[in-house]
Length: 370
Image (tube, rainbow, N blue to C red; front, side):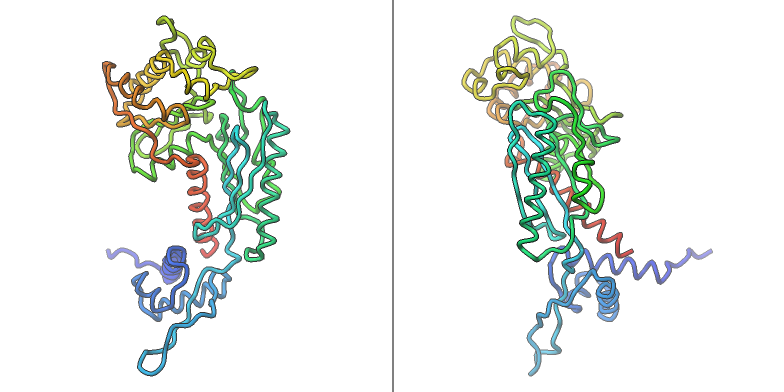
């Protein structure tokens, strides 16, 4: 029996999706250019443009191609409509809250920051989150180019995240937040759609995977806090609760060869910030104690034994400065693994969250058409 032919409705939907994606890539195209980009006939491309224009997803820009006197017919340029929407990408970190609004082309529409005091308190962090987002709203309104609220938000948080609720969790010795906040609830009144929250190291790993495609690696973050993202078979593994990679309490080799949790090594060496479990990055950079390199080597040995990665990527301020020493330490282990510095150095967590927000926004636009 012959396989069933795709319905006309399905074919139209697929054509419209291809047209939208072409406009997302190229910003503005004529019907003829859309035909070339999507591989459909000019009449089919024209019909798709008509449908998408009626749906409010595509607009005539008012720009025209040169025409007449042997140059062919004048062509109209089309683009995505302003009302297709934007997305928020947000970073919550010890340095403060950063919020960005991006459009479907991936352009930065607005960016705002709000400071977080030390020690960070849940109410202070929530207030800073609202402040940053409200500043974004004011900037977008002043620009007058974008209509409506963002359609979704993606949040990177420098704390463990419950994957089922999006709430930030307080684990023992966590250096940043002293309690729990709920970004989903805080941002719910500022976006028209879902709020997706994940740990900052997971987002940094996503950014690293985009920059250097790998399917099996561990991203070890060494800064004020300690973290690890596990990427296996091309996916970030979060665990049942979302707490996979919380390595601060992993047992390693401490000073004088004593076995102890990784986080305690810094306390024994006097490398914590006053009144906090956060690592004093400046002091560690100055001292560069060999015991820290040994302890991180123990962490890498444990991770390598457990997940068998192709590569260990080192991120974080002091981690990247000690990457050569860490790699040399790792090379001495029974199961050595290649260690290198993270390729994405500027705001890696926000970079990962921003890319995810853009992808989700584009998929939402496509689903809206369908």
